[in-house]
Length: 507
Image (cartoon, rainbow, N blue to C red):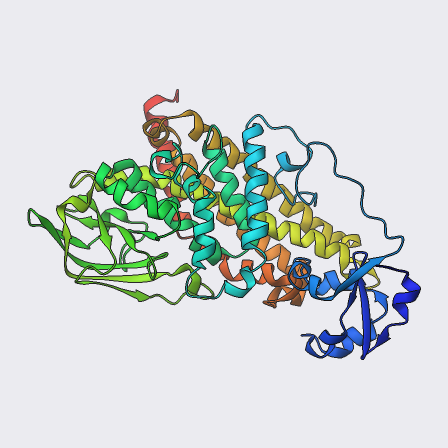
């Protein structure tokens, strides 16, 4: 049906309440008494086009969830925005997506990346985003969604090249000519949800836990573990950090005693993401003198092994856990790689882990910028839109500079990963990835602060238009620590710079 604005205006009471949002007419009479902001907000604006007001207090995605229940027709004469420009993708909020989505050419992305981007975005907008608000505080992600990610080939893309085709059914198809840019697209698109704990719950295991097995595990172990993890049927965690050793990996104290047919493990692990519900735990243990580490595959349910919840604000769904080992016997065949060579495995895995985290931070920073632009165009204060206030524009510009700079650096490093082997990359770009990861968390911290000033009080509200901003403020500190704290990353990169200069530079 089609209605004129005059016809809509006749429905302006508590018992007969219509509104217009983005050219669509909604009969919200049954919703009046349930409106979170009180019924009078709706009644006072009934019979009107409330598009601008709606976008000030609500995220537009809420219409995808509730709109169909109340939609009754369209507003006559409503003009939609022009068709998108050829070659562009996404919502076209300036700086709301990476530059190659919008109006710029890139030397990095091919048609396979563009097809994969469209595929992953469609999946996220159909399977994850519509319901994420209902399960983001649950103790674990929905198994049906996680398994759909597996069947869609998305989980397999998180392990890094080469695509683990041999451990997947024939009907699970990944992107053509798979590389690290395809993987980065996965993290970028999923992170549009804005919630770090949700992202961690559905990406952490395949991104940093399973790759250790795929790179260094026995073929028997790969066949035993990889298929179920890649298909989302089982979860896996990486257990390295301890109560007294985080960034100081060489200082780990969880001990595994080699008794021939098995190892006996004693000690503790802390801050283990997905640990509460993981079926497998890729665990770093001390098997010799200081710095001599090994990796063992620990399976949930093994006698002498227990998990406890670690309370981290708004992060229940990430399943962060404290792991206890008390005379825990692990079969010798669960050794990953060679005994006492685990430190090399940690270093090998760190580049990929830091790349993974940086890709997420880059999008979360961009979410702050995108949401700020949309909010500033709709919110009015002192008789004008926020976008007309110079100080707000300066905040937008500041965030855009930093976000685009971070994205450019990330893509450069990703290209190096695509064109180098693992050993060469470890030698050449480990220090740069450390700087990149440290810079990413600083950019996110900056954007979280600036966007808070744009949103004001709405940045403190867990619902409505500022819900992603409230999440950013709460979670930004959590990205300064994992995979190496900022100070440790900066110090390592500087030490490498001096060491390299002394060896090869003309001083």
